[in-house]
Length: 581
Image (tube, rainbow, N blue to C red; front, side, top):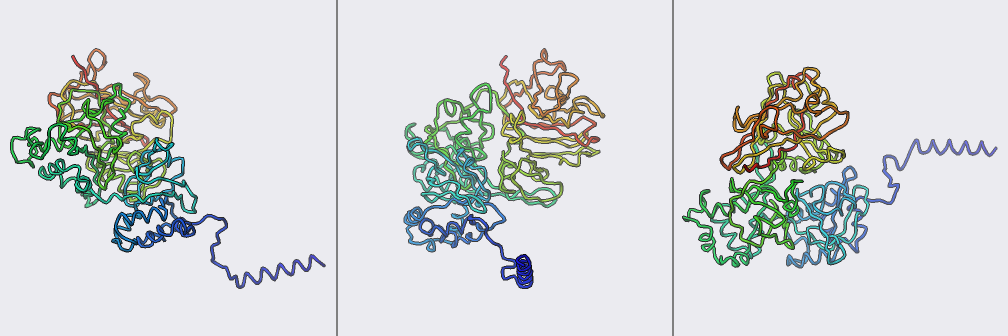
């Protein structure tokens, strides 16, 4: 009898809710986690003021989206009060709404960053909604306390929300709304340097934050502009007897007051302090695994370079490390402790990285959450696909102009590979982890296809040149010279030469010296230009008689490049080693 009653009750229960379910189409929270904004609102004693900022900047609902992931840097109420006091206002509504929106965007990253990745230090692995990079540092004087951009102390880490992580800040970050010139000018410590920037015309360049690249087929891409400036304060100038703009012009030997002319000595001096790209202090203290702890950095002066070593810049000028890595909208300011005159450098070993172009970095940054030397997704031919967070590939032709491409007459059968791709390799580990900057250029341009690039300025002299590159087991047929392959035969020529500045090499050739025969991924090198006694092909050292930029053209001479579906080459970098005779 009991079983019959239970059965009848079950029938009534099912019938009632199947006919009229009062909670139909309602989503229930089955665990205690909340979206980021809701969590902050629930801790009103700590974050009510920042919630007001979020709402005023129209981003409160945005970071409550469950179908996206965020890292939210949330200042406490005390931090917001202090920020408003500095701004001379009593509430966020007294500030411009657009500024408030930028402020909020600067505190939100469209990616969920776990504590382990957050406290690694250095630049965070994704950019803010405003497109800026944030820097994590540690204060050794306070037992390694964690700071963001050296100004905001982190008091709580990686609070879990449904759609990401929340980090609590005891200070409000200063958004990178100023350009390099604006920041230097506002500080008041760089009056002479700023006047030099102004009168030479470099002020205009350092006020630019974006530029539009017009590519083939009417394509337009807006690229972020980034510079690094070695800034010299009035105090540092004074140590060298420079107390005015005229004194600086005289010190550097300016022969006229036509300062905007590129040939003018003062213009030359100012350009010598400007580098393309945003470079942290750590970059100037790392030397790419070269045998000597020194590295050349190319400046906007054209052919003049700065040598970074363990002794500083040009063997003497030091960084102001306590005040280094000043992040602004269009780059980084690096204060230095010397006036850093232009110096003619002697040849030293240096690396030409096939992926180290500021235009490429800007393009990668612009197209999604990722950044150069970070995990990017593949983009199929002819399509526009959003970037995602896994190791992958990114088509870069025809989106950028730093690579000039001529596809072979018969094209390529490697339909799963684009003609030219930027690829990251870091998380795969193993030998591929050896690659410089964790990436390489994938070349798939067909038989008699050509890729042309411009090198940075190279100091006059004779060089041994070595190519470093990767191998995948799918390329094994190339190493064995099977299936009509010529082992990746490629001609490398500088400045259109067919003589001493040109060489042809079988890049993957297991038959001659074992390159490209294994069943596992490998990292390889081959000497392109060496002493004749050390080279079976009779090639000579590469010699340049002038210090200038050069054109490097690579022509694929392997028939399999147009006939085999797995043909491609992975180029990482060229190592130039000077030979003093």
